[in-house]
Amino acid sequence: MEQEHLKSELYKLFELYKILSENILISYRGPLDKKVLNLLGNNVKSLLHDKPIIAKKLFKIFVELAQNIALYSAEKQLAFDKEMQGAGIILVKDLGSAYEFIAGNYIKNNDLRKFLDKSSRINSLEKDDLRKFKREQLLLPDGESGGANIGLVQAVLLSDHPLQVHVEAFDDHMSFLVIGVNISKSFEDGKY
Amino acid sequence: MENIDIKGFKDDFFIPTVNFSADTGVCEISGESYLEETIEFYNPLIKWLEEYTNSGEYNKLTFNFKLTYYNTSSSKRIVDILLILRSFEESKQDLTVNWYYEEDDLDIVEEVEDFMKISKLNINLLLF
Image 1: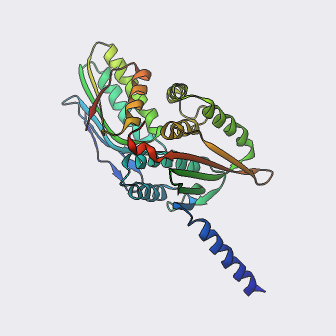
Image 2 (image 1 turned 60 degrees about the vertical axis):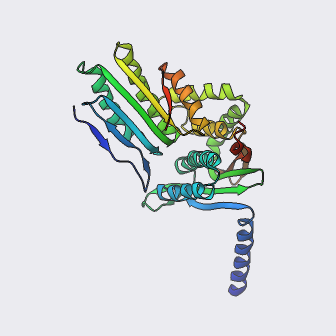
Image 3 (image 1 turned 90 degrees about the vertical axis):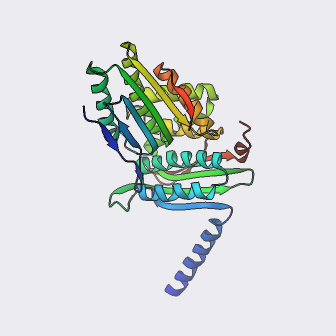
């Protein structure tokens, strides 16, 4: 019985491994402490070293969204620095004509409505209005209206794409939130 | 006034290199600034600038931003710095603000435009 259970677990792991191998440049699941941020950030830079414009954009988006997870994820894990850090999943995919950056983490259902309002507001703004919104946010004292605002605005400005937001219900208290950001490879042609 | 010299590093976290000199009136922040919590690191720098600009002893200041990477939490502290520089300039003092950027980094050019709008300061954009 135990043997069979183990066998099916191992099979599931292989399925997961295959999923994480499809066009994936970077995958990570766990706490987003500084060590991990540094390691993954350097990976982003070196994997895309021949595409400096995209590497820079992707790195900046990575830092904003990874720090969002570190600060706001409803799931905390013991990290390298022996402190509890927000945990989640980070993926970088090569979609052919674009790279996709994906960040996923648990969010308290109480915070979900606020987040969805923020993200749909950000997605509704044209570039000039988005920059104006960012300027207003930069002048707010820390902690006001939720720090995650500017990071999301920054991700949209850098990628020139709206945030893709997906929410999966988990239980009465938490949901799983996925944010996707696309970075077109045409940035490297200097066409923007 | 004591000068500030901080050597940046990016092992566990990314702090910029800082050189503030009361002797020369040249202040410089360079490298990468990717702290999650920026207050602790930037507060002494902001205090130093307030002291320098309010002391009445100094009438000249050149501020060089040479940051290649910074996150939006650091952007908030950059705004704090620019607002201090703005009030220094308003008191008829001699202020120069330079921002160095890499040629292909158009995102930074837009950000500096936004920093100018926020602070109402003229910032010279210069290539590294």
